[in-house]
Length: 229
Image 1 (cartoon, helix red, strand yellow):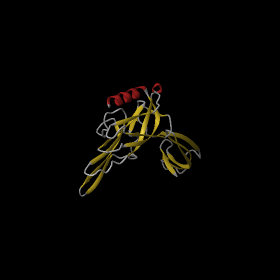
Image 2 (spheres, rainbow, N blue to C red):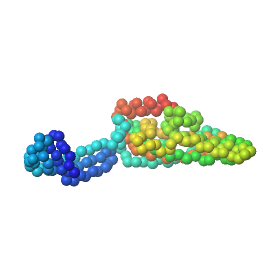
Image 3 (cartoon, rainbow, N blue to C red):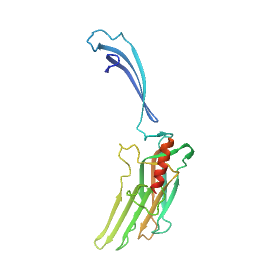
Image 4 (cartoon, rainbow, N blue to C red):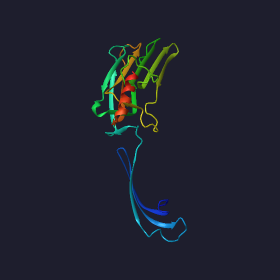
């Protein structure tokens, strides 16, 4: 492979190329020899054959002010109603270290909720959400502290029963670097059923990694998360 190198004023031939992908970036190591003419048309080699070696590191896209401190992690948890129709939440501890300005960068969330019961002549529901701070209701994506939410509604009538599921995309598109950054030590699972005879509940799995934020970024993330509640 040949490329034109303006700094040398000529063409160079890439003899081999080594690419390594590691935590936080991509490293490219290559060696080249000068082979072709100068830009001015001189038919001779540019200063004779030479071997050039270069090592470059290109960091992957990261939120500004953050440095990853772990590989990919998966955190799973669940919650069930304390009684049928009663809003219930569960506090999930991330065990972050605030002294090190540690945060958790959420890259994707998978959620699941128990289906509502089929009761003659009734509309039943099961609602579930994942939020960054404590709530008094399940909420929806219209609330800034709700990271993911699902609602299943079943309506039974004379002609039959219909079930509808309302849910945001569980796994974000690949072009997103992250979907949420948790700066406080906990997040919450919320659930509530409507008109069910038994309790309902749900589960969630968060995918992400731990990161260390600089002081200004950490303060801004904590303030934003607290104000969203």
